[in-house]
Amino acid sequence: MARAAPRLRIVTAAPRRVLALDLRPRKAGFVVLEGNVLLDWGVRAYGKSASDLETTVKQRIEALLDLHTPGFVVVQRRRVNNPAVARTLGAIIRIVKTEATNHASDLTILRAGDVRQFFAEHDCHNKHEIASRLASWFEELAWKLPPKRKPWQSEDHNMTIFDAAAGAIAFVCDSSSDQEVGYCPTGCLRGLSSGA
Image (tube, rainbow, N blue to C red; front, top):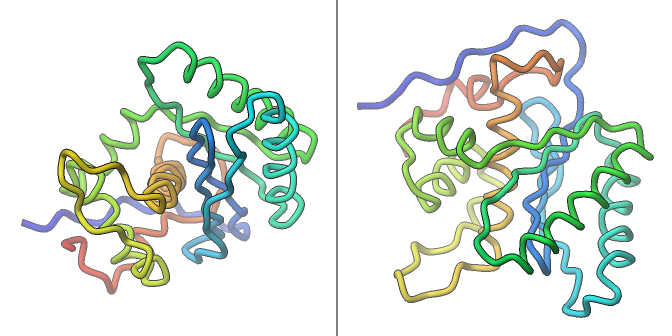
């Protein structure tokens, strides 16, 4: 049974641009949304060198902020078991926070559980189902949709784009948020079935 689209938030002002990031130790996936329009998406690599990490991350994030001038930067906090990876991600989040502040963008850090809960309400219970739903909502992402992976396979490079998009949609459609980001893209795509 198909679920109803998320409730819309009515906002009279023009929608504000949202830059959503999926931060990983060596790369970041990103999407840029304005209302229900997907403006840009991709993956930016930082490289493997720990000594250049801060400079490289700063350059990559600063370039995205300069290009898109978002009102909001959304980052999904992920749970990691490896202490070294946790330290690296913490350092990257601090850099993003500093750069967002320098560019007058509001930073929101989402819990991964909140994003999963949002998509569970739309009958998406794993990463591939979420990515498939996002590809149906945003046709321009369909060609980036990775095939469903087997348990022994590594995650596809492009999945980070879909993780960033999931965070953006969960943020924009969060009815408890008091931010005026516009309207919920999933609700605005009324012509699309909520079933993939």
